[in-house]
Image 1: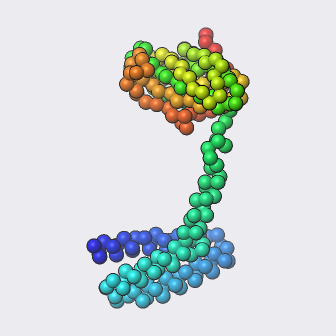
Image 2: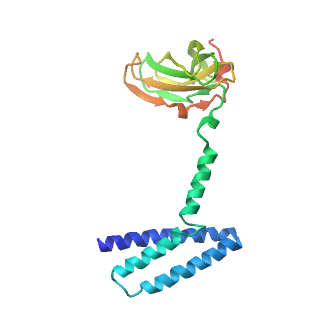
Image 3: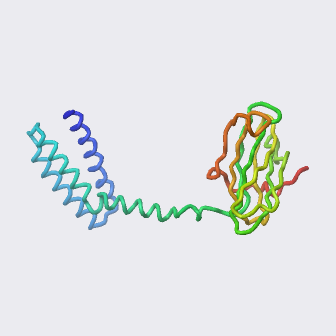
Length: 222
């Protein structure tokens, strides 16, 4: 266990020591001064550890690691600060919600003639909206609307299902709200049979849906 612990500490220490070196490229005087001070501390501690193949060797290495972790530029405080900034930039998820049509993007159905595609649509607006769900065939260009389903007066935060049918081929499902700027979420499951209770081939979760950049919401049944 002693050998394994020493190897682990060597690995941790090596990774931590490399981090200050990467920061030197900033050429910030305060940071560079901190790195030099840290280097002196670790070198002094390293010298003390030489020639001691005992538990004192591990203690010296731990002291070196603690010196790095408590460093105000490269230690835990700085790491926590960076994580906090990332969380604040991400917000609580609501800032990522964009109004308008959303789509699965292209997907492929391997076989079958009447495979069920179940689309669960949720209204994120404060008032009722209408939603049209379209199934587009990508076998030709431009794409063609093959099937559609309408959800009327979908209440705020409520979810309703729309079921479409597709055979083997390349497809895309687009969810189009009215008003066009209304925000919606959708979960799409592609089944290997002709019912929504059939085995699921794959799904598109709400977070995986994309904006309708190809304007498929403007397409109509031929």
